[in-house]
Image (cartoon, rainbow, N blue to C red; front, side):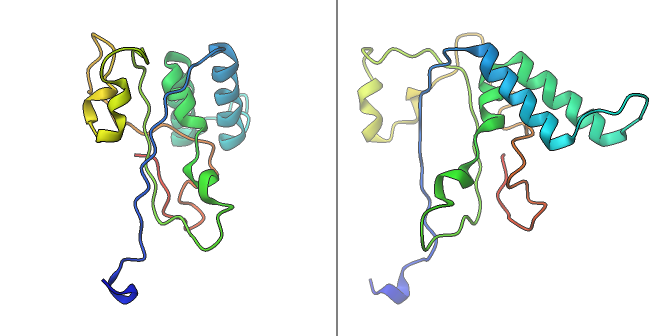
Length: 149
């Protein structure tokens, strides 16, 4: 296949398992990010849709550490310093998982198996992919099509 026949677009898949060592610090940072994105609330002001979105985002990050993390992660940060590339689109999600690196199957990640990262028992996938306000660096308002799905 010649260079002319290859696509200029590349899908980069990254999976990470992170350990939350300080949930309060994570949640606090996510709430600070939301405050910076939406601005400080003005006492007595209705705010309308923006206020409702902010309240939803705050409630979501308070209720779930995985969503707090997702609200802070920005794929643009991963590639912004890489010369010769421009982020065309991004989506990301997070979920709490049971993690045991010694369990059978955890070392099979190279096989591309999707079943390795499963929700905790009792969790369902309804709401999976719900949008959560992120740090706002690439929220599409500046013409960048990056988005969280």
